[in-house]
Image 1 (cartoon, rainbow, N blue to C red):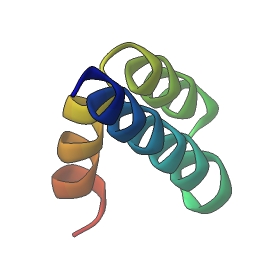
Image 2: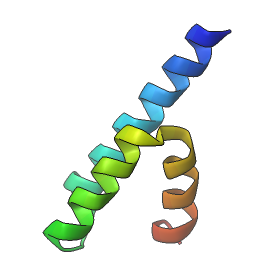
Image 3: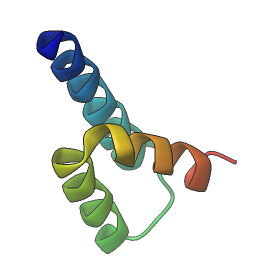
Image 4: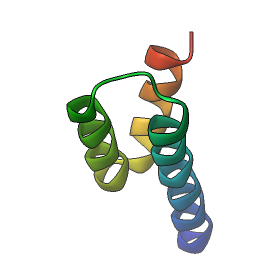
Length: 55
C-alpha cells in the first residue's frame, strides 16, 4: 500500500513540476515556489495546483 501511495505522490510531483516549468505563464519566483511545494507535499500540491491554476 505504501508503494502505491509513493508512486502516486511521485507522479503528482512530476506532473506539477512539468506543468509549471513547461506551460506555466508565471514568474520565476512562483515557479520555484510551486516546485518546492511539489517536492515536499506532492499530492496536496497537485490538488491545490489543479484548482488554483487550471481553471
